[in-house]
Length: 105
Image 1: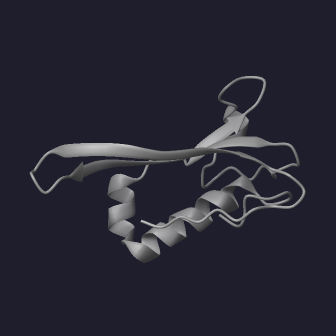
Image 2: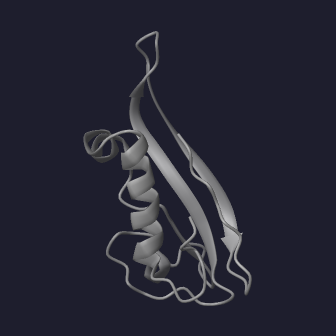
């Protein structure tokens, strides 16, 4: 998630992660198994809706923003035929010198 840095649009973060997942899996897989957002900002309220990581949020990322980055994968089936879902999450504080986050499925 190289776009999780000062000045980038929040939608760029979502779109970059989504594109990487589609490249590893497929568009159909992503539509069937991914949630519509990849987390949200944490601020005065725990879940700042203005900072939701979605494909249509063009708000710029600012120094000091804190995000709960969460990729929720749903509707999977185990080798034994059981349905399951899971979430990968981490808290990220945006600072002056960004750190790259890597997503791999």
